[in-house]
Length: 242
Image (cartoon, rainbow, N blue to C red; front, side, top):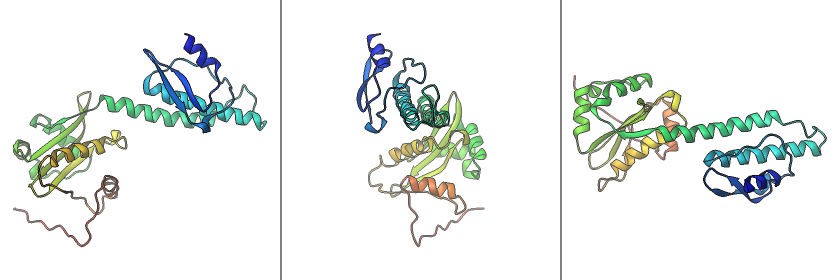
């Protein structure tokens, strides 16, 4: 209670301040640009963990904006920068959502039990389903010591998948897919990391190749952001049995 009273009475300034947690007290460093006169804008309740740090910074920014508005005569102490507060809250809520949802996601080794759900995911992500993706082929693929599949699940639902393999000269990643509702939150990057970890566990592998359609600009951007580059002058030729 003593620490909470100190928190409520002290201004937010650059440096260290108390941060109320459920079981312990953490020291949170507030950047100098957040320093602002004390302006009480809303009821303050104890906050915990990662959410506590984000909420504390949000409150400090809000105080700074309100103080600036008062100094410029644009508002009185009872008014608030609602537009800025809402924008800030949206951003922090997005970060909090990512933290929460990533904790609930499992990335596990793919088995044949996942086949039907993975095929459904690939179809929804507009990945061409070929003969090599049929049950028996995937079963054979997963049984090889030189290949592996990963699936990401949340509450039992398959929301991500990837296949990877090596010919002991190069590594390959195939059919990386993430449910549209869970994109842009780091899940695809985590699946790629799992594939890299498996491929580079073999000695002598120094590179990984992927196949991306020219029309798939989103895919090109994703792979570029993960360190993959186009090889100038290289064309991929393939021979397929009927």
